[in-house]
Amino acid sequence: MTPFLTSKLAGQFIAVDPAGLFISTVQVVLFPMLLGAILNQYYNNLVKFVSLVMPFIVVATVAFLCGSEIAQSASAILSSGLQVVIAAIPLHDSGFFFSYVLSKLLGIGYISAQTISIEVDMQNSVLGAVLASQHFGNLSSANQSMAVY
Image (cartoon, rainbow, N blue to C red; front, side, top):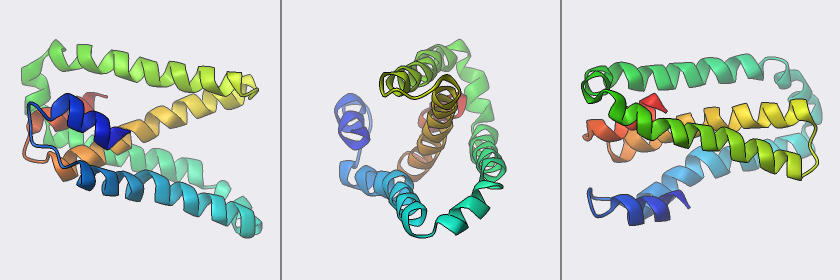
């Protein structure tokens, strides 16, 4: 959906390569999910061992990637003022809300649904960082909107 929506919504303002966005999305989202499912299915002992340290590694990686983008776009973020923040807050809040509600509709408990909601939002930030820097690196507005997100 990301390549299609980006092409339709932003394509009239900037050049968008839907095929490139699709490939990047597969590399950043689908491939790691498939790898995780395979490892969980066939290498359960390895997954149990790695699961102990992964939350710390994930948080550190997300902080590093998003912090890097924020640092690179700091002047653009500061110059745009509330404009970017006002655009990013509903996106951020809807990510939390819909991932939590969907988790609850699937019968997942409160703590797990809350964890899924936080994880989805963290991954959205990283996906935004990767896609913005790879496909819109020369456009500071694309990076700054992701950075605030």
